Image (tube, rainbow, N blue to C red; front, side, top):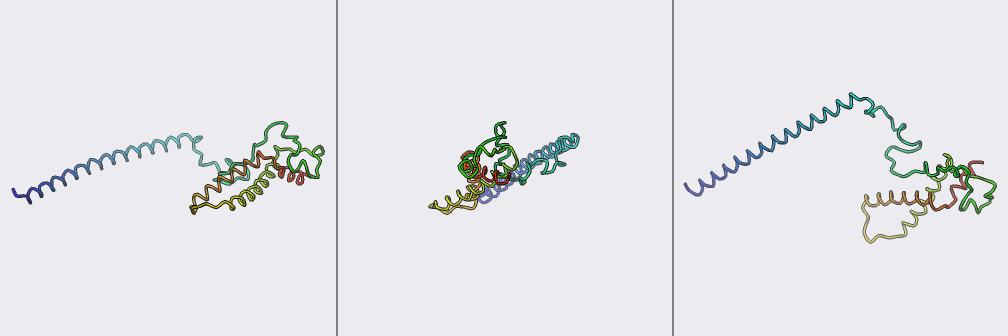
Length: 179
């Protein structure tokens, strides 16, 4: 047998081995696929058998708080103030120092009007924080994804600032609108 014949025989052997491996892997994949399809069929029949577990009949209006959009990632101001003393709170921050005397007006911090006032204050704080962010220059160019996630982070920062800093702008807005 010459060297060329040996190479031809080895190539044929290699092809036979590769073909056997391919068939083995193909059958394993087919078995795995059948098992997954059977599992999927069992799961879908279990959901249709138990209609209380099927949530396809629920709309986003039944799940989302009023005024929120589906997919809204931002933390809101609902249920920020829940104590009994929050129903009859004194103004704070700029509202306490302004033209309204603190003893004359009380604020219901559990109301929807105050929640919306906090959202407006948060919008103004966000504008202020965005202006401050523009003064900081990055040595590298930010990608779209990085700038998007930074914006989301700063949205949460402004929400937290609005809840905890006590600027008093929401109190002033509430007092003006509650007249």
